[in-house]
Length: 95
Image (cartoon, rainbow, N blue to C red; front, side, top):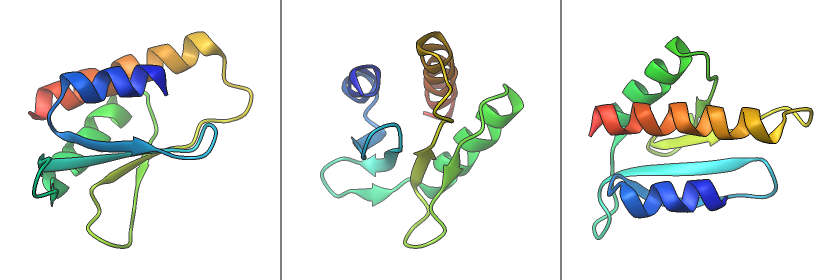
């Protein structure tokens, strides 16, 4: 969560971050005040992350602007940092 909160501070497109344990949701918005969903940017981010070897999902209900991160329980701390770094690079490219 620390790394995700740092990303949120750096990237205006990240509206909200949260979740229980390792299951984290990252909401992408066009505007933090209006919370207008950034649906296309979410799709692009997920596609780029997959191309780089990071598998994340999205919500199929609501607007479809939440990236779902659900790593296996066997993931190492180094793997977490690497995956989140790749995810941040992808978010940077779509904004």
